[in-house]
Image (cartoon, rainbow, N blue to C red; front, side, top):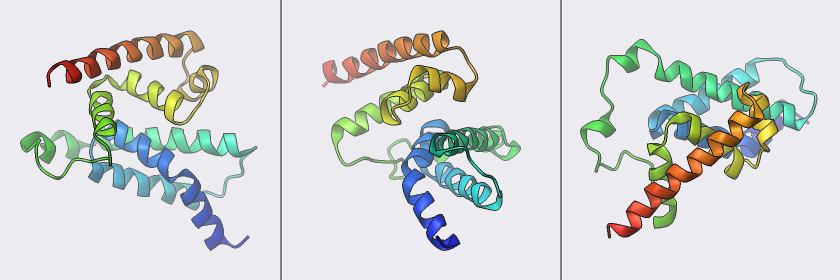
Length: 165
């Protein structure tokens, strides 16, 4: 397989994982785009071998989270105001094709990161609680507790949306 084919197939295979985590973590499309690009630049600049596809996927998740952390803690980010906070109703926020998806994403964005992350890895990436625990370097019991609390918070947020219409 040529390098170009490898690059294309790897990006295609993991683009939704990396972009979804980045969008979830940084909260806006522009920073998520930057993180996405950084993750794959790092991936292709390293000459690293992986034990298997799960190891590759775990590496991409960890790298995505680290790149997000770098963006969120940068001095530039601390000294600026996000456009989304200035104009919440502007077209700068990310939008899905259905109303339900938008409501779930909006509710998910309102959760503390520790709940958002485990919910995304568990439901969207289909990792087990043990796998999530290894990726995040926490106990499996901690992951299960975060899932339980995250589900409860999501339930309350989504319930509010449906009763306020």
